[in-house]
Image 1 (cartoon, rainbow, N blue to C red):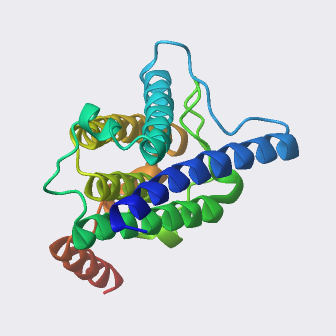
Image 2: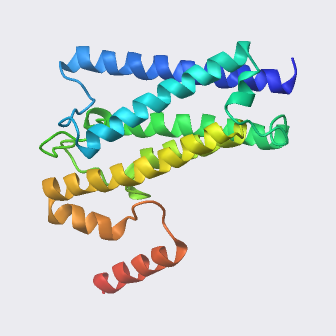
Length: 222
């Protein structure tokens, strides 16, 4: 099987598996605990708009990747970059990033256990406990980072106008949603969250900041 064909099959199977896995997982959690883990906010709110956007793009991506398996000509319609597709190193790197991101997201959700929920509700009560350990000791948004890495991997695995648009929409939506969820956490946990936010960055630990935090802790202990 040619590399290009194998990659098409991989992308189709990958997003089909993600859709089945995510749907079955949510159904199982709802039946076990008697409530949905997808927090529905009032229609028209930013949280609701972001959920609708992600659902629509997930469905569109799945459809495009499945159709590409049986109809390669679709590539022209979604603006595929001929010079960048079929490059094992570039496209293969994208596929690896997608797999790594999927594993990381699953790990983070498992670590959160019953504290995980998609979005925030109308009262901004997101989660019953403030998690500051594990992946949340590295970044305040480990799942969002995993999603962004996965989207970047998709863009590398299938360079096209379609994947660039998906990545741009994903970045904009996640940046907005992360701000909404942090506001909800500040309202719920107050000073505890502000202290946590001072210690752990929203996205990544920068080396200089890590050194400053270390020196600050040392001075406090003295």
